[in-house]
Length: 104
Image (cartoon, rainbow, N blue to C red; front, top):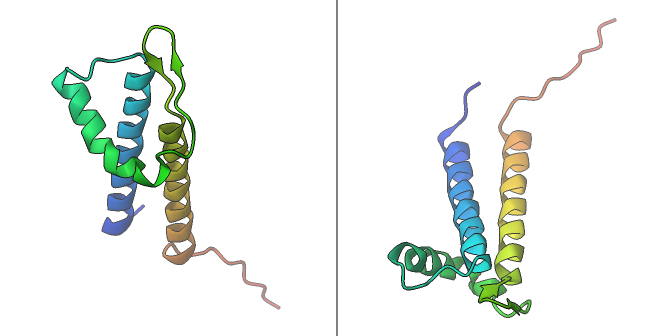
């Protein structure tokens, strides 16, 4: 089945965003050191994606330096929902519909 460039590009970008946000959640949850360059890169890359969600939910610290970042989790859910909407919109507008013709 042919997939136009926009559809593939949108799904790829949203997939990368969701992956990075999921990675951020895991790194925060396990208390990854921000002194590590990779961890710093993940935090800096995902920070602009979290701006609309910062402060929406508390981020409780658990003993041992673990952080549950609910704002990141909510952002991940929102971006996944946006991806779903883009997918459904594309399918309903671009892909041909199968219609049943009634013949007499």
